[in-house]
Amino acid sequence: MRKFVVFLMIMPMLVFGSCKTDDSTRTKFPWIPSIAAPRHYPVQIKYAFVDFGTKDKRIPVYESSVGGGIGQPGSEVDYVDFNEKGGRDMPAAVHLLWLSYAERKFYQLDAELSENTKERMLKMFRKPYYMSDENEHCRYFNLVITMLPGGKVWLHLNGIGRTAIVCDTLQAKEVHMELEDFDKDAFYTFKTLDNSCKLLLSDFEGAAENLEKHGVPLRLWDKYEEWYRYTTKIEFENKETKIDPHYVAYFTNGDHYWDDDSIPKNIQTSMKYLSFLWQVKDSLYSGYFFFDEDEILRVYPEAFGNEGRLKGELVVQVSKYNNWFDIFLQVEDKKYKLEKTKIHVFKQGINEDDGDAVVFYNNHRNQHSSTITFIGE
Image (cartoon, rainbow, N blue to C red; front, side, top):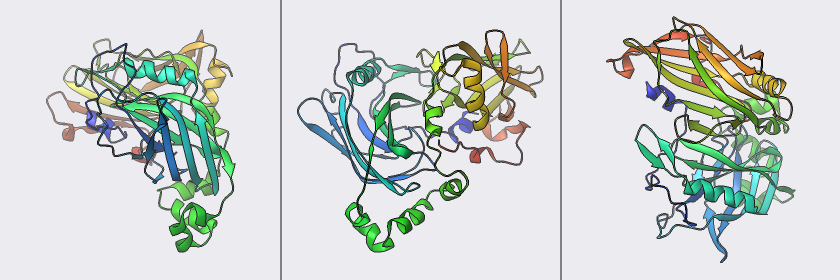
């Protein structure tokens, strides 16, 4: 049933020999830069460069319009020297000039990365994570630059089955320029910035409708990046149940991972999506849990405190007959219910193909799972 997980994921599966053993002394690794933007707040870049090392080396990202989601690579450099001997030094600086279609504003960033950020990336490159499906240890190979409304810029490291934020403090400045200077083709085609942004925004599914309904809620991404001290706990009333430890979680800040990847998980942002598999005797169940945006952004700070200092658990309890679920945050002796979660469960025999799976439980039959999104994801 893992194919039901895949259709909800955008997971880079590039074959660059990224699965390797641990090497705690290396300072250079193969990596490429790419750009991203929220699904409903796409952008167009005039240029994007990443400096690396200390000898004015620079990698470009090709000009592109992107809007595939936070931390989701939308455009990447096509370098034949990706596997160049010894790899590359750590990213040192980021240079961007982009147009936000929703805001109809231009932003520019020329930022040196902090030593803390570079050290964090180096540690992550050095320490592989585990992919149990392949029984291999894999490395990150992609630096994803996400451009957000208001000029915020987040950096993620991305690899097969895992994305992790490494910097959420970069801030671009708004700049004023003529559309003709930014994109001559757009100027000749659309004449004005307003026309250009309106029509290009419509190329991204749901973006124009989202903008009309929600506008540009700049404080939303501040909420997405709030950290909380918690782990995930899945409990079954039927004690004979066997859970597949290879389950996937997505978070509001763009992070995602498979739980059994050997990386500690006790400080995380709000969870956006969770999927796991379990077996009861001769039956397999695949559960998909879509958390409600308004609910988690309200309940998480209520449970953990505005500064996220309290520790707790996200608990998912599955009933004896696998058709009822209690989901809540447990902080000390208090429970904070997450009652608006949309849940979709499939069932199949252990010897049946995925195509034989049937819908076993669905509490949102009026909305297809593929259309469940967060405003600013």
